[in-house]
Amino acid sequence: MSKIIFYEERNFQGRSFKCDTDCPDMNPHFIRCNSVRVESGCWVLYERPNYSGYQYVLTRGEYPEYHSWMGYNDTIRSCRTISSKSEGSHRIRIYDRPDFQGQMMEFNDDCESIHESFQCRSIHSCNVMEGYWTFYEHPGFLGRQYFMAPGEYRKFVDWGATCATIGSFHRITDF
Image 1: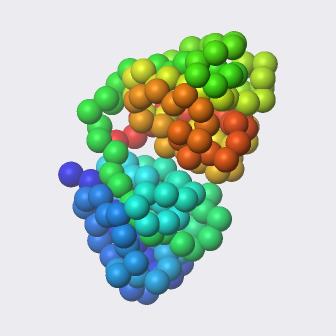
Image 2 (image 1 turned 180 degrees about the horizontal axis):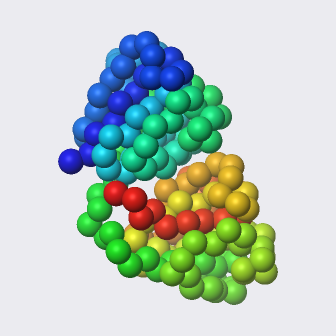
């Protein structure tokens, strides 16, 4: 079972809210979120209700302030737990054009720099065949995050991005 605790203040202070299941609207539970403790499981936090806005993928551990999970602000309004059912193997195909067109490359492991590995600066579509992944806006696993569950993503808006700039990605392995 997954469990996460949200705190209104930094360093696990102030009002808190414990959660062990998906929550599409956290507005009634707290005003702001400045620290998080993931006691078990893997979670995706969202800036807006109904699983929209900026995304943050958090694994087990302590996050004493929002910068520690690469947060842009202290706003978390929904969350969902990630199932460990596909824990183990990982496989993803990325394409430099929409609808699985253009140059394609398949990965089974993390990629710290798309530009160095794939010789392009953008991913316009992808097919997540196995496992869960996190896309990052910049190389070195930095910037905006996008949670990628198994499935087909014909264009970058399908995974919630406003542009095709992805700099790196890694496998989610810590459940």
